[in-house]
Length: 74
Image (cartoon, rainbow, N blue to C red; front, top):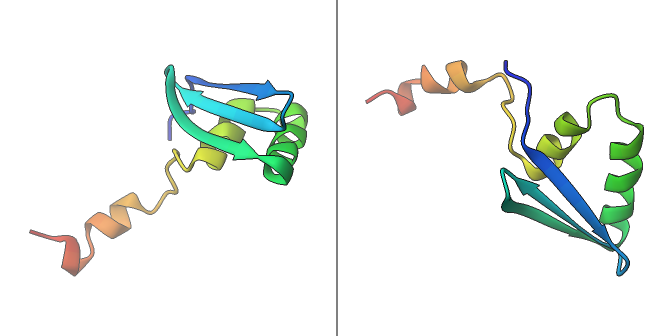
């Protein structure tokens, strides 16, 4: 699985965090969720992985299983 890259976040004084992926808006976090994200991303060994997980933009490892499921075969 390739490592996520291209994520960037900006923290604002009004307790808002904007996360972008390749300069496109990915998500916006407010209040306690923004604080939780900041605490996690600042202590993580790989901040890109944290941002990918918070935006939902990452592979979960089950794509092949889902593709081969009978209802998904065409």
